Image 1: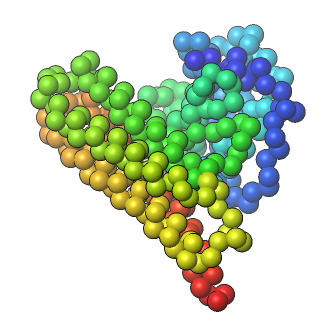
Image 2: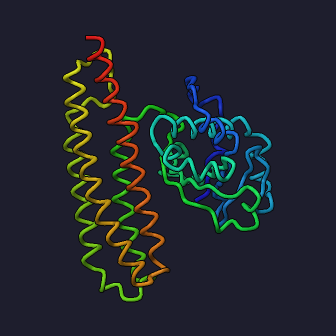
Length: 298
């Protein structure tokens, strides 16, 4: 993809202003040390937190982006960190690795629908001293989605995150023929994962459909919140089942020394784990706090 060109089409003045959001120290430090990685045709352009071009050699379009679209890039960075703070637990559950790397966070931005507004972000951390010399040693943290024109996410963004798990499971199967020594030996595992994530997606859609897309706590009773919390918890239970199946597959691949393929399963397992953490910390966690607050007031 060519995210450099997509971003050059945008005018920062056309983007909705971000509402002020108080960030904790982890998110503040990640924002200060956030690197951006943008596609420029077949290559990836790495920008430092101050938008210096670290690789590859800057061409005219990259130079135009960093020289004349700095407010846009700054807006994008603010949006990414605010999205992580509101709609994920990626930084919280990976805080140790991030802190060990002096809070360096690398965001690889991928155009999601070729319209220049929605992006899929892969996040990594890396040693600041070796990010250019040993770039391949970066540590995968997880993925998220960002919409430049719509910050608020319906159903806490759960539908998009689960759809991503289903999409990524298909990509795993596609890589199998190329990366596995004997793909047929693992057919049953691919079948179980495919069936599990398909059931997860179907059940999640059915559960979410009757729920309010965006919760207005002022209009919901304690019982409403209890019921909604239980429904989201049910979705999380399906995620835990998928997590166990993927974990069994990963363990087998490591035992069979399938080094060329197991890293893709490990990355997929990371995405499932991150979503479970998001439920536990941000969705069911915050709903539980709201229930307790209403009960206390009563």
